[in-house]
Image 1: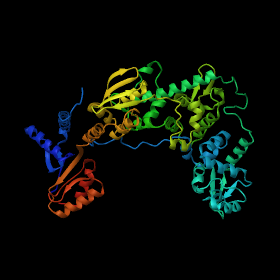
Image 2 (image 1 turned 120 degrees about the vertical axis):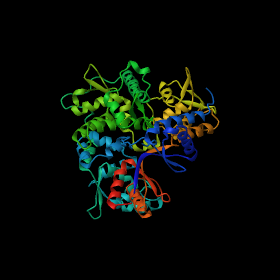
Image 3 (image 1 turned 30 degrees about the vertical axis):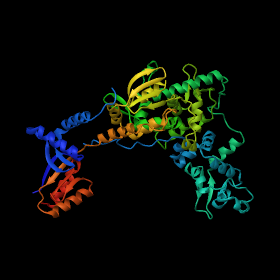
Image 4 (image 1 turned 45 degrees about the horizontal axis):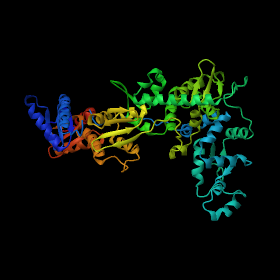
Length: 69
Length: 489
């Protein structure tokens, strides 16, 4: 039987996918990853996109060095 | 949802000079335009020098035609063959060497000034009869001055140097206003009214500006636009307004262009009566006023052409290519930059336009009379990038305006690298609305569906080992239908 599952495909690099999995575990009861496809692709619930974007923003901020302020 | 959409639809390319505008005209439109000697004059001015020479030779020949072989003889390939060429071209000396005649004639063919009669043996080039007649008029000086109506003479007052000066300032102001509006620095020019709706529409249409929540903002097309020379900028806006007001191929368009043809021949600073224009031209005159090509007097029913207007219409194809056409009557202000490795940028400028341009991607800190200091910060650059400005453009812009005292002719590599990294960061995660399809019972049906999805450009991801594939959500219906039709399992 062929199944179809709606969601959002996230294409990213490998560290980023690990980060997404980590996020997924953090939100334990409300996991958003539908299917872990391969190293660089994940299918997630569409409702989680804003959350992912916010968390990514935070991650970028943390890893950003401000030369002068 | 696709995160990496940039710019969206490719903008329609608008003409950047008279040649490019006329190039789009149909033969019949051109013939209609050639009823006026001003059009013929303007056309002659906008073609390359060699093409102009060819026109003059053909014009003075008895039949106004010229066979292809004759024409090629005018362009002897090298000096040694010039004698031979001379004998073949009936004693005429070659115009130039080392040019292919087809390349020279090409602009004339595109403007329908010359027609290639291929049915004849041998095929020959023929000048457009209407154009040739107008040229005759011009050569015999039997030409009406521009904006001359039949009943009344149009020379009201003689031009005075002071007036020309004033017009110069006016044109400059007008164009600066457009540029300021584009970069969103209308604080300074708040006393003057903003650009008209037509102009704003044109800016939106050309995708230089776009609507967003905070109002209008500049796009990457707009940013590139700012790096072009002034005449190309004015032309593309003018062409857009022309397109908007008068659809291509209509008589109105030809009428409106008649205004531009006459502007090209007008004397800057000389007042012309408004009454000599028809309705279409009056409408178009407002656009020209908006861009600073003419100044419409408020009280006296007259208008003056600015020098910018005259130069604009006469700006040529090759000028644009070599960037020599932009003897900037509009001074956008000096800008000299020093970029430090700590992302601090010192900009020596006093032009508010340049400052506004810089503040699109700099976090401005200090402003001194001739110097502004800003930081390239991640947030400021990200803001610029979300407008569609690319790192490449930023780096090129910074490099182009480096202070002459800076030793290396480029910005510090750490800065440019960081700009590229910030850009890459935006693309690190890409999301697409998708449908995952799995649970296949046979490799055969999986393969069939993968091939089909690929054909209709729906496939995003597939894994033959796990028998899973992901397709675009917007194309999911088609895929599902295929599954049903083929009874895939």
